[in-house]
Length: 511
Image 1 (tube, rainbow, N blue to C red):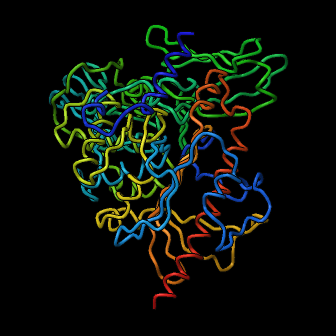
Image 2 (image 1 turned 120 degrees about the vertical axis):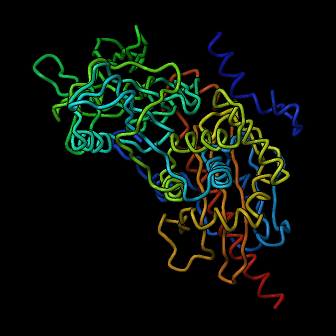
Image 3 (image 1 turned 135 degrees about the horizontal axis):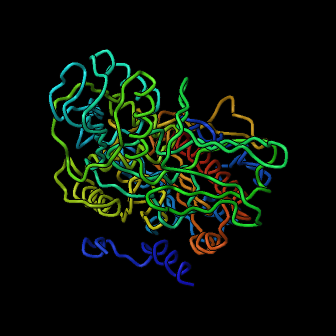
């Protein structure tokens, strides 16, 4: 019962909030995130007669989608802000990953498109005859894309610099931004898209779990898989056990991530990524293994309690922020959103100690910059407690800042016919950010009609009560979630095509 109440409190947190500032205070087996599936598969649940007619009412589309819960949408002229169409547009719903669009604007404004994250190796003392007189420090500033291959390259550079060992040990520092064990504390522990966050991250803060049947048992491995290297680490272990549910259990024992998995779910072989909860230690243990392979003895690995000082021997930089954001919006990478959002809050001098605090800082920035007052509990939209209305989102998108900075970075959204085929001559060209949680579906961005009219739009659908109840069932994909998502995407398609047709006709009629 307590877990249920905690979930309901967190997930319903935004429902009763007003827009006042006072109340506002209240992908599995790939190393790289994979693009979300296209809309064609999601349209399996669509009703017949999908192609909208001009005489159709968009309110009728909502009724025919039979989603339950609430749906909020708005279409605005992207340049004038004129409201072209709306339905329940002031109702605030979870934005899911559409929140990443706001995070992109927040980070670009604070950091600039050329910003890069640094990961460094520092010596706390001089290097004498190849030996660091003191500790070697692996320090991060929040790079969400650091991977095993990058650490391998840093080990090679350290060897090229003549370092063979240390008199102290390897110290890791991940405190440049607030650290948190999970993005959303109410989601299941084994979900790879809900990892830890901090200043030193590796492999999107996931470890590669693989299994192969050997006789009557299984060979299980956990490693930090890279292109050529597969170092194993001591900070995580896993065991197959005989049980029904749950599929996975997680506990932390003396700083070690301890997993169990139900034997009946494994089959003959397979793999997936599991999250890690102490990412700085994970990165340090992996680097120590890679350095050892280069003949460098770094001794024991420990975590620093304060920012160490020293001489930088090796520096690795991420790609620039513009590219990070483009990839984040394409692949909907939660960790990237959280890290760039936290970095932006730190750069602004905001005193934040966790993700909810940084989410509030971003909400306050949105209100000051755009006049909208969302309630955001993180930067990725993974937390179900975030709330924003379609009207608020649409007005943000219709600003010159959003059109200039965000629109070129959004991904293309195809428009589909009644059989799931991409339309050869679609009534509009759409770029947008998608968002999906169980029983929540969102889409927001821009549509250019064939007649040349630019529309800023936001479409939010959410059955919040059903989402909360489904989380109590401890299922990764609860019953009904797939069909809900399919119907929501069908609704989005009908609205976009209706707007493309209607406002092309209206534009032509006024010429």
